[in-house]
Image 1 (cartoon, rainbow, N blue to C red):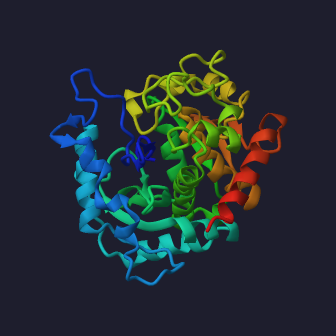
Image 2: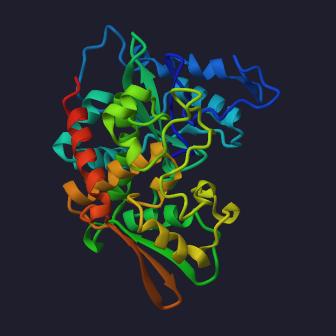
Amino acid sequence: MKTTIAMFFGGFFCLLGYLQNTWADEDTDDPVRNGVHKSQLLMHPVRTVEYWRPAEQKPTRQIRVGPAPPELIEFLHLDNAFQGYSERPVPASQDSKLISDVEAAMASLPRAIKRIAERRLLYIALVRDLGGGTGAMDAVADTDGSAAGGFIVLDEGALNRTANAWASWREGSAFRPAVNWDIEVHIETPKNDNRVNAIRYILLHELGHVVDVVLGVTPIGGGNTQNIGDNGFYKLSWTDPMPSQSTPLPGDTVHSRFDAEWPDREALAFYVFDASQFDITGSQTIYGWLRGTNFPTLYAATSSADDFAESFVNYVHVVLDKRPFEVRLRTGKQSEFLLGSCWDSPVCASKRATMQRLILRAEILQ
């Protein structure tokens, strides 16, 4: 995920990388960063359902995949500038092999998940030099201001790895590297370790964010106090939203229910490599803490929104599809177990039941 995700803000969905709290010298009504007004992002045409589904266009259940259109490229440039990313995304080439691999990944999803995508995923856009990660999702507002769904952006440059290589690269990005120390993640058997299944896992994570948006599961995903309580996911791992506001702004401090055991969890970040506050040589301690929580992956511990997206992808991958998931630490010729699936353990029983219920709710949405 590109840093963070969209959130519901004042009746409109916020930008691709969510807005951090305003800087001290900003106009809080319409902050300007690096020459870009927040309102340029909030009101951009690509964040409206009319852009993706014109009124004269006949409704279709087909999920469209292709290079990012010019208006989306414009939006991504504005978003990157606002967030301080130096990258200037460009449309991916009309690579029929890449497009067919994305389509194959979508076609392989369980029926219930494909039904969600057919109703709520408006476009899968391919770019180069996205910045900030492998992919991203932003929410799209319907004509009445409610959540119509979302679009996904994938970085072509990150899609040149097999499933296990990509998962290992992402996991390792949370740590400062050291010679002869590597984190290996196995999400596919050797027979199925290919690019299509890497794309599949990435798309499932982003689809988790789409479900978050349409159901309002987390504060950053757009949930209000009522939705968050009704959905029941948030309180399994996170403290109550801050009492001063029903929907905390991104950047507010929100603690997990397990922070007493790992007080510097909030410093955890992915795609940072050398800039990480955590050295790979201390990763055993971190995964030891993780195994005592109901976070299914390390990425899930970074925020409530990524907790839901990671729970979604890992539940579909492991429980529905019965595919492998294991994280190991390799030091020289030695290999040490760090993490496996939590879905059959008592610590994840409530989260498993909640994921099953929320996927069913999302599946029957029109």
